Length: 277
Image 1 (cartoon, rainbow, N blue to C red):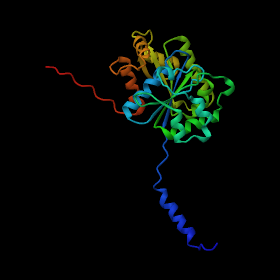
Image 2: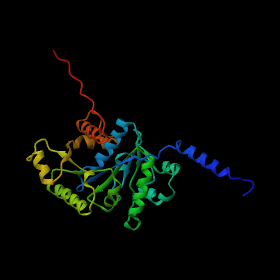
Image 3: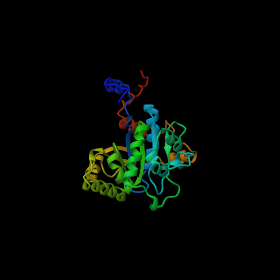
Image 4: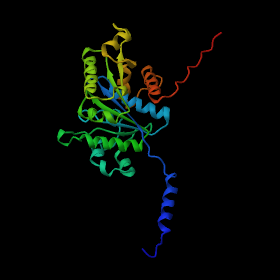
């Protein structure tokens, strides 16, 4: 329509085409989940330390999110002061943007962003599958790494989000009940037709002397072991009591660091050779 002529349309098309190459690609962070085969296997401890190590080793933006809705401990262990929880994220999922997101999360002193579980939770206000997935997809656009504490057993949240995960670390200990839970979770995922290539098994609190070899244990559980971590409960207790994570020189912390290096696909530093004649 006048006063525009036939040249305006092609001109606008050229402007649009010229802008396409200048648009920055949408960030797509990697999502890793930690799930205990049964209560007390240490998924929360691993999630907290791996998140801190990812920040230290990669220098990337890391989010630690507590999706254990009923008994989440991330906020307590990380001593965060935020008043918002993952439920606030889900309730506002449809209007999330960068500014609102920054007001919902807290920051741990090492630079990790943290979103805690709710202090009071009832199943009446439990988020549904689509709401959880929408929240995770938004997190991908804001962070390079998203570390999820998924609680224990194949609960509703873990089941709903399995498809959104890049990797799931299933944490067990060398106890009959835990190993049974591990096999049960694996079988349920297989029955659901889920991709088991992203499922990794970590044996936590491994005793110094085992009555079974690693090869025999892998045959029993039907999965290869991604890592075997030593037991150092006294050091963990002392660290959490003082409101910190394990110090870098701690033996267990060093094993966490090795696991992080493997997870992130980094090259492990070569040990320094000791001087000798």
